[in-house]
Image (cartoon, rainbow, N blue to C red; front, top):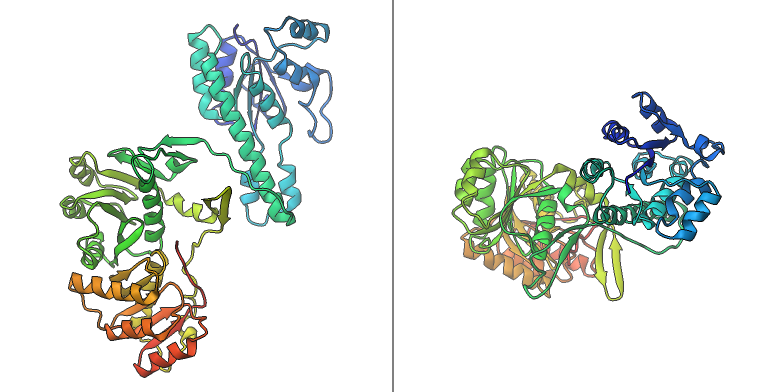
Length: 512
């Protein structure tokens, strides 16, 4: 059966003109409300106000307008059940075959600075989700659209199928509706839970973004959910695996720490080398690559500037799994396309906004949820955070700022030896901090880099003086660390005895 009657009520008018004209072409009777009805009428397309259709006025400043048996009866009654059809006739319930609704902009409203609780509550849509759910439940007969991107699909099917849509499409659209209404409800619950400081459960519902090649290992199945594609666009290469996605997120977060042209090389989410330069990505690359010329094999390279042909030529000589950049120059793309398996990922600057979202991780029987560790804390008023007799020099302070931003992204226990614009040695994930320090020193030796005059950054406190002393003996003249150990005085004394400068940030940056 063809679509004969549609109910349209939308906050977002995107694509509405084309939709209304397409439905009018198919002689579909259009019901609508408020601003949507006015928008359609101004196109000289016949439209019936819902209040005229139901014979019941809108009440309470529009809070009640579509919550009526003639609306929900027209959506919910089964066209294939004789008893339903007869009850519809007996009660003057006319079928509504298409519902087009997008919801009040609650998420956008609460994202605005200074929004009041009253303003937020007024943007909680009641009639919209009710109509969507009624239509989605009866998708065997009713087409329901919550996303303007689907208007074109519905009109195309109506053109092809004599004014009707296919069951497959109705099923897909119904699933999208339940996903959207669950997201909407979750946003409301999260806001109220935070605003009212009540105790409530945590829920999440995300659409499937893509099936992944495999998980951490080829024998593990994996899938990606959410809107990853809004922030990272794959331009070429093999499909992504679970570890690729983790690497991409970690690499992007690291490179966003820097304003100057920056390049970072990572392996298993750990930085192998990071460099910044005042002039070019190539200069930043040279500094990053010098830190460790072995570990980048099969790793991830990330830049915070468009990748140019000069750097592409250098990178193309190294086996790399993923390259991430805000953009790729035409010549660079052409060169890198020759490596068919190489994954090129274009990073959207809007990814930075996701750092305001919580981190969600699996836990036995549930989820762990926490705030993002989005800022390198303790760098403000750094001169006032000095705990040693000798204050750091201007160069040492600059190296501290650089090293502190990098060590935040190294798996704990983490140690980074740094200069003003580059990493010199990185020790990650050891069971003791002194071992991480020894590993970083060894890596610098392997790379042929001197640690003389470097700064050592530690993601958490030095529990004993031995870790700091080993760093100083390797050449470090200054250290930046959170402080907070019961042996802080012992550690400070060791620094003073070696004429080293040290800063306590007051904040640790563990990464597990």
